Length: 636
Image 1 (cartoon, rainbow, N blue to C red):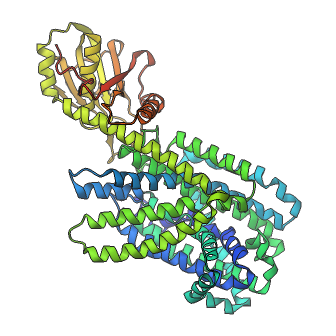
Image 2 (cartoon, rainbow, N blue to C red):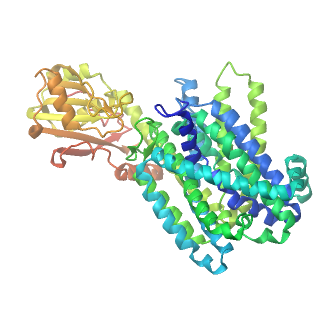
Image 3 (cartoon, rainbow, N blue to C red):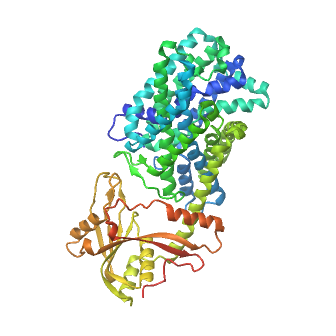
């Protein structure tokens, strides 16, 4: 996927600039000052050298040049690499060790999504201190109000936000580049920072303290993972155009400008508003407003990446199926997930309320995103190792270089672990446990489903030959997939429990139609089997919610009267697969956690146009010991 269809390429990269690069684009607000406060103002140029080369190596080399070559059907990120690995391995199962790495990497990114909006917005609002010191007391409250606004507008979709945010970020990058150029013109010797030897010398002279300095330098590349994770939203071409054409040169110029300013004004190194000091006093008010707008956009980069990750996790059966809504008719990957949006917003507001300053939050920042960088490199290497046409020695050589870079940043950030870095780390562990639990539970359920599955044709024969009493009316078993496996198991289990068979039994498949996003009901496909069993497929556009009653009405018309639909005599059956016993294949605590997730995960059919009085939801108890609680083996 190279661009959004139907739009000019120029507008796509502008939208990408607004969504993808908001996070890394606002790092100059706090990254340089955090690092130079540790190294000392006398080493400002050396710190700038470390930041410049870290950006070049992490973003331009690792993500833009290496990682973005590997996409799964236009998608990027940890889960996309996992999908590539599964595809390359074919029927060979993925080991638990790989699952652990995938879950941990995704969990780190999800936990980072709670920190980025909080520190970005708070750091920008704190710029009002450079206008008047007493205004600082209002910064936390203003940041919370802005966060409420940000998460409140997510429902309008990434694409719409990108068209608004793009011009704002374009102005932001031009502004920070101009601020840097002015300072460089006053002190051109700062260009010595382009020599990587200066930064390496500083680290060598600092000894173990160099890790602390690099922990602050790592703040300059937070948001780099969004470059890859948001690949599905805008495409490779527009993202790289925005990076090399605008974002990268603007960032380099601004960091050099901050180093130049400090080389002339060394006493400013302890000022948390160092970034704003590059601007004349008369323009600081507008700059604070622009910075605040930019940090709102910075938060969008991570929010968009989190939505994408959650959707990918659901498709891989690593995360529960949260209720989601598509927000772009041209790009199906752009979605809005209300539950995740609420959780992220609540966490961000709590972080601002507790930490209250950007410098305090900086101690918690960096651990999660640099840890995710390590995982991304490992998964990339596993994908390369699975390809026989890629020389292993090349993969090993590149992997060693990536791990030296990633582990240096990760271990440096871990020096802040007890100062707040433990928060995203512990949150990531909790999310990882949820992922592994859900994946294991679904894996066991799918094993039973496959073991007991029979084709609809065979099920129809059993229904015809069975001895269970027939009752008038229609029972409809709905699935969002294109295959009937789970519906067949649901039919057999529900009839086993109720000791009866409906006059008409319908398997209704409502898959998404990706080619026509606004098609409410596509052409129905109706198949009749023995025993009153009907197999009906009615695709619908992914931008509209499926309507089960209307789909059945369309199927009745398409069948020419062979299938009759009476809405007053139709019930819709939905199972929730439930592990009654796992045969000792899950620890008791993990099974209880899975049961909790099953019971409480959002129910995804409430928008299908089904009257509540016609809906039957039941728990399909699955007993691994018996190998078939979903099915009694036949319909008698």
